Image (cartoon, rainbow, N blue to C red; front, top):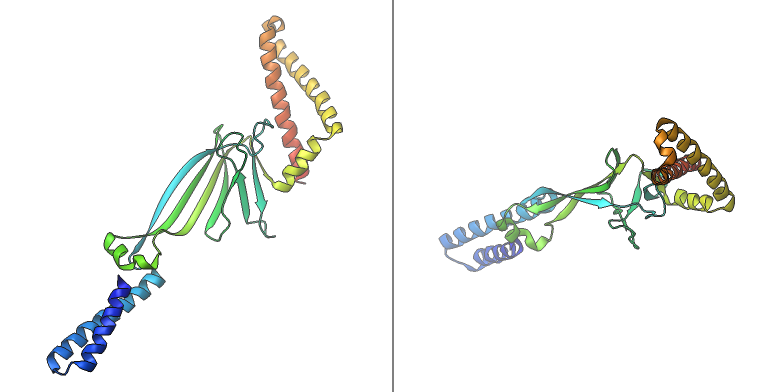
Length: 244
């Protein structure tokens, strides 16, 4: 609407100044159309440069996310792909459903900031805050809607809240981890170390609770728990070696 008002005021200004002979109506129309013309130009410039008629509105969305490794590892993984060489810009890869085939990723632009925060919760979540320019009223939308600058993104913050047991790895580190854990030598050593770990911790548990010596079901539950603990520790140790 503001462009139509600008064009009409310019036409009226030209016609009244050139073609109207009587002094009073010519002066009146020229003055009114000139003021409208100047105000329209100023409003358009202010809308373009200073977002006149707009205000910042922030919305927030929180979603649960799942490990990038799915259920293949006992440790949750959040993967990222470095962008550039500064080490500050990363694209994070995540899933919003268990065993999701095609993962999602964060956006790559100057308005997006990613943060990773360790929490005591057992579930990982992604909180996305977006700030957009929105029209202050329907009247402002009516005036400046043709510019299409409503709902313009000005800032996005992705906050990944991860359990302390989760690991943050680059895609290169994840591939190296997968390769190392897939080797026959590593698996043989891990199997022997896991058996020794479970046996040692089971003996300690029985020493504390002698009744466990005859409770096979309890031993099976503890054995699975000890095996999972060992796997987590082994992965964390392997990852720390890869990061050196």
